[in-house]
Length: 264
Image (tube, helix red, strand yellow):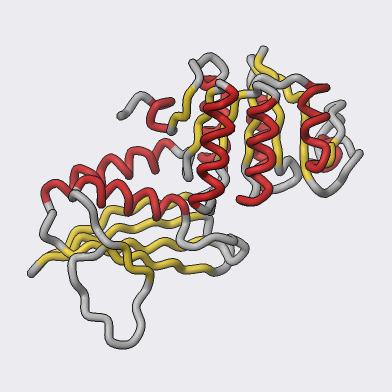
């Protein structure tokens, strides 16, 4: 039985992840961590049956992990909170699944060091959906063959998303840039902004859009668009739980969802 702790447990993604954990015969929820609903049963918060797991304060994460002894912690929170969650998890030798995005280079360095120094396994990716990971692979293949085309990335998310551009869009840009030997990124345009050979990245925020990503390869007389659209957060939650099963048995290291899926 794989024991799971979830941070951001009272949020939309946290709830979906817990639902998937409960459906699994191989998993048990042992900790639900958040900054709201402290002391309430997480089942009550989710409006399902009582689960016997009280929501615990994120400020007490070190104590919670020592007491509940999870095998894997799944984190979908916000960057500054995730850094603390991840370092606490690493110190307690708890493997990680991290879907939080928007880390600064300094925050990412802190995270990577904590994971490596404490010898745990972690899957860190901006997107856990199977479709998005295939999408990134398609972009690499297209870039090889369309290396002289103009490339633009347009992403759209709901109006509550805090970071922009999305982690998925940035990963798409990085995949293309690496394929083409390095490209400059330009974030939106204003005023006199003649196009060169950069990758343009544009963010749209509105309504309840779950996540749309389009990459445009535009040449003379034609264009190709490669698109992924998320219809619900269910795909992300399902992928995160799949990654938790995988990472619970893996050797120490930092991995991506492509490792979990075996599509590298």
